[in-house]
Structure formats: C-alpha cells, structure tokens
Length: 135
Image 1: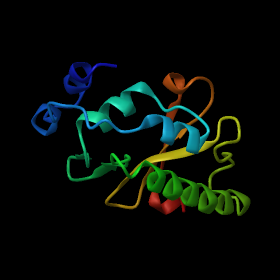
Image 2: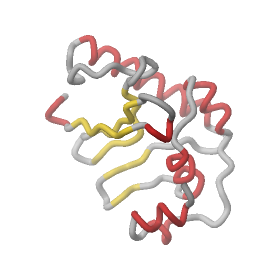
Image 3: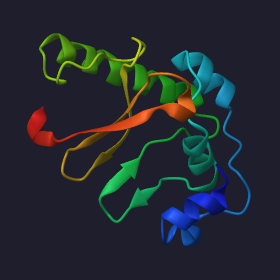
Image 4: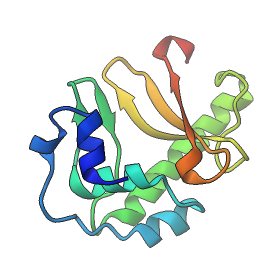
C-alpha cells in the first residue's frame, strides 16, 4: 500500500510523514520473526517513526540499526502471550508462530492490545483488538 493511500484513511498522517524512508533492515526483522509483515505496516514504519494515532493508539515498529532489539522484544512479548494463552486469557486464540496465531503490533493508552491474526499471507492478516479488561 502506498503512503498516499494510508494518508487518505488516516487524516493528519501527512504532517507526521518523513520525506525519506528510514531504511529499516526488514530482512533482519522478517528472518528474526520467521515471517514477513503486511506491506501497509512496513510502509508506515518506514515513513512514520514513533507513530501515535489520536493520542490513543501507539504502533510499534523497529528503528534502523535496532532491528535485532525489536525482534528480541517481539519474541519476549510472544513468550508472555504464550503463557497467557496457556492460562486461557487470549480467548482461545493461538499465539504466533502457530497458524492464525496472534502477533502484537500496537497498544493503546488504556492497555488495549492490537494484534494481527496471522492466517494466510501477511497482506491478508486481520486485526484483533484485545481490551484491557480481557486480560
């Protein structure tokens, strides 16, 4: 998805966009996670560092030169989510890398978590929002 298409659905995004992509080493991220990520997420991460939407939703993304640290943090989150899934705190959803497993991409100031359901190809993944009261 182009950055212009994202700006069309996220008013105000253009004011936050940088002109030159950050040049994140996506191969490190993809190899570390064991999967590629949706194209629109990659585009957002390249052009909108530290993206916060409406002072509510924070989209996590790697920083250039810190891709391995991002992967380490994501793996730690997945480990914690795996523990939560074993305790039946994720509504029966599996955790990535299980087929259709949840992979977190953001959170809210209210403690909500935003996940992809990783079924199919990355650009086909759907979003699941887990409210803080669910955890």
